[in-house]
Length: 206
Image 1 (cartoon, rainbow, N blue to C red):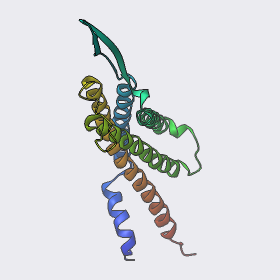
Image 2: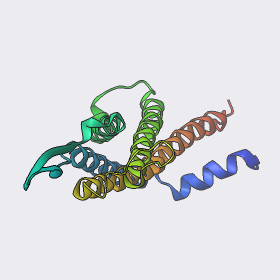
Image 3: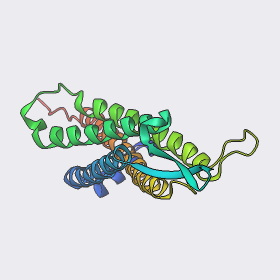
Image 4: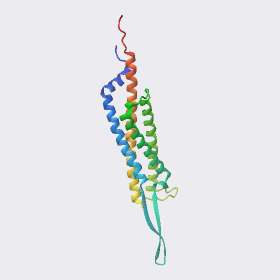
């Protein structure tokens, strides 16, 4: 019997995207996403810089003020660290589930649960990265309309390390986007395979 047009695409992809290849590709992507998100978290959490400024002069004696820039001074950076930390934990747990999952019975809920959690973490890392990027732009250029001064000309090392954390986070975001797509694709292929197997049962003659 000829295949319906709606069944051609899943079956074609299924030939190219084998189950074993899918598993190891996802494991590799999850490992990279874990490393990227963990690096973004650690760099941001450990990011601080202390500088001393001359704020006044009394006679010939300068009056100094020491300031320290830390990530937790900005709520957006705190959210960034939490979001990337959760995404790194998510991918680590998913790696363990994939390696040890055969020992447990998920009653068919494993792939839907993983796909849902991947999309949730994709949204989480996206929100954290974009919130931090907004504050980073403000710190670099300031806002003349609101009379907010830029700080990156004074805390250059702090801003450079923050930029590195942002790059790692956006890399994790791109990886999570691919992971989410592949998770949904796996779910689609499994459902299509089950549906086709059910419809292709041949009754033997008596």
